Image (cartoon, rainbow, N blue to C red; front, side, top):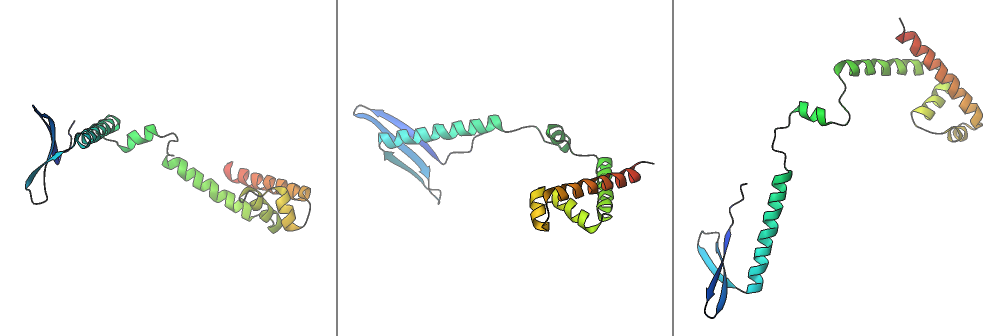
Length: 157
């Protein structure tokens, strides 16, 4: 694993009077500096270094190293993309459905679209049209049968 080059180095120096702690770094002009720091500051720096190293290692373990191709992504997909043929058939069916719905009388078409396209329930449509829900339900059912019959006519040879 390759780690980024550190901008500083930590150093401990043991002497007869105790341990001294240093941090060395280069400033923006490239001039080297070495600072003596407290033990607490030094230990915090080392902890930060460990956390950063652990984070980098975690990242390396969880990064995908193989190249990801469209084919690989498609195999991993929960829902596989449709083939061109399937897309064409779906588009033709959608066009036929639009033609069949357009062929309905205005009131049935409006109620059919409110129910199936805009997902209003029979009571909501009845309130909009100032009638009862059973009339809406019957109108939508008749419209549905007409659309089915029209679709069968187009889809069967």
